[in-house]
Amino acid sequence: MEPTSHKFTQNARRAIGDDRLQAALANFTTTFPKKRLDVISRLPEFDDLRDEGVAIKKHVHANLDFYLERFEARVIEQGGTVHWCRDAQEARETIFGLCRAAGAKTVTKSKSMIGEEIAINEHLEAGGIEAVETDLGEYIIQIRGESPSHILVPAIHLTGEDIADTFKEKHTQLPADRDLGEPDAILREARAVLREKFLAADVGLSGANMLIAETGSVVVVTNEGNADLVMNLPKTHIVLASIEKVMPTLEDAATILRLLARSATGQDITAYTTFATGPARRGETDGPQDFHVVLLDNGRTEMLAGEFKDMLRCIRCGACLNHCPVYASVGGHAYGWVYSGPMGKVLTPNILGAHKAADLPNASTFCGKCEEICPMRIPLPRMMRHWRERQFVSGKGAAAKGKSGLKLWAWLAKRPPLYRLAASAAAGFLRILGRGKGRIGRLPVAEGRTFQALYRENGSKEQ
Image 1 (spheres, rainbow, N blue to C red):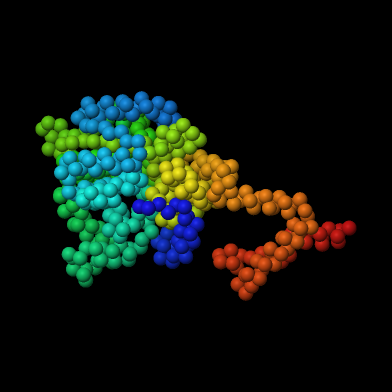
Image 2 (tube, rainbow, N blue to C red; image 1 turned 90 degrees about the vertical axis):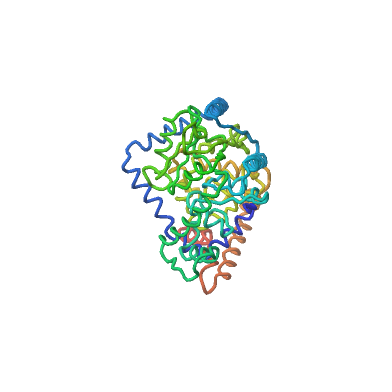
């Protein structure tokens, strides 16, 4: 996926004017938030769990090298291999090399934002290896040639009619007049098509919600069960995970699991919570013959040493997206890359570079809802302000434009007659633009006289 984060403003305007997208997003702002409220109301210790989760993550980050090395040692003890990768290119080449060594022609994948981050699908396909997404939402957008619009619900931007049309266009081996008007029909068709891919796959590539240093295990949570097939059917299982996903113990992982589903989808726990520990043992009939873990840094170490280290506590629950008024208005594609919503406004500039995502930290109402509901209490507004401050100091980006505007305002404010003249002229111009409609685009125009004009008039009457 070619990033367009630097075009957020244009992307957002286009999204707001897209009636089909707005229809798809219509129920978004109530569904997940309501489910979250319902489920946490039944767990009085939820806020205590949040505090415990934050403490676990802070401890891990203070001792990250120790826990990563311990995790590697446990993976090796279980018969697996760990591969350390500094950046996206190293990770792509490592995974491609492992697939070639396995003689892979087809790779099945379970949903992984890290996979999207390094564009692994494109890299594999360029080398002649078919990469097949097996999560339903990811599969839908893959065959449409699109990127995910939400980290939990990748196809949230599509309607049922969109999906039915896509299946009829792409699944040409099936009767053209079949009825796909119900979700169950779409699901059955996807299962039938993907079943062949599962059975043909030579390599399974999964992400990881957590890595357990105590046991060398990988934790993957899903609601569809596709990840279990990806991890167990092929002869080779490759796990792709970023370094901050490591947890000290199974007990610590259990704490995070109690927070994850409740914050993400409003469930007590996801339908499938799978712990994978190395390849199949002697005598076991299930599981891969080869087990590899690809650990990716890609800027995380640098974040850990600076003011954005709290972002590494993120457990990818998507709660900040689900409650964000900006995301609810423009959807995920407007953000132009893998990570959207409030977490994307902080994470994307760190990974791609501030110059490629300058608009994102400024695309916020600063209502504070993202920090309020974040299960890991990540101070997202504060970190967005860090990016704004950097832009202001550097003289680049939206904050720099604001800096020029503030200078002009300060110059006028020191000259009251000119300030009053400019304010009156601006108000009059806006009224002319909005004449007949009372609006400019979606915004109402100013009505009546300026505040200063009314103040002068009322002040003279009092005297």
